[in-house]
Length: 436
Image (tube, rainbow, N blue to C red):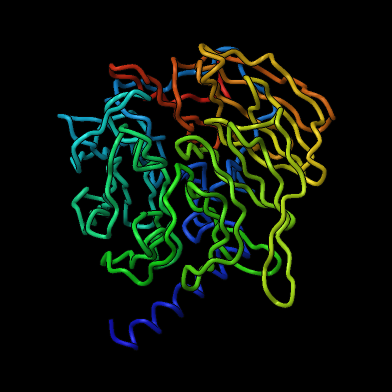
């Protein structure tokens, strides 16, 4: 790449990064109430400031439509009047655009052969990202595809194997994404796409979103299952990445390492996405517990230290949320927990949520101002309040079958996907403001 384009791209993404980090959400999400990426506009399970926050939950929410879906574990996302669902069709990981009005299909594009192991069905496991007129899809075996929003036509695609990543699958002791598939949803900011790839000097890669050209690549870590998370820590814009070897702060400008906290588990099973608030990063896994990491400056350089550990709150395959200095998530074995992120102490725990298999319990969480909506792996919705220092239920409803997906929420409407067995599931659109 010549010097001028490199300078231009770096200026462009710096401009967009400033807007992103200081507004707390992407440029796209400012323009709409959509749910265009994994865990929503701000990538942390929180509805937009002007979104509809639920105060109660009907016992039988109204089903607006319900359609069959192919196998897969990728969560649905919503943008500009369409739901984007990543599923198995004809033994290929296939991106499908579906009308939010009636569930009718607009287009479907087959991308890559499906992957299957002992953890779930044949099909994609990575949630797509929609930004402006592009849809970004990462397939299980490590390929990244950019599609046109209107037509589904492929604009560019990249095979991570050409960058040195060797996908192994469920064999031997292979750790991280190379074992159970790439679930770590790419991050789109401005003109850039950031992805955790793997391979020597390709742990994290910055791509030009228009062409797929590499802007920079860095580090030598194996990718885990959690996606890169943008954060402002001690005045420094960065990505928090949960690699097989631990949690790393990455410089947004060039991918260089800012700080590192080792965390090792069997097979690098790091699933839960890190969270950041008040210069504290919350991260953990099923064998190391939930940990609070303080990021601070020392002689103009960033350092990090673990300031607390909480074994009771250890996350497994669920992603927690933050609200007013507290972490809410699913601990061990299947308890809902509230943890003070400054001290790491459990404020309360509750075991009233139901799961078909407590040892593999999963729950998704959506922050709605002072309330939180949860969806369990058993398909049960529960709305609870966080205004008191105890669990206070505001409503509960059974809405779908067994699932391991994050739902998408857009102004009272919830889009859920079920079916994790070796058979097709459903995509369901619910109106949580109305009763059936």
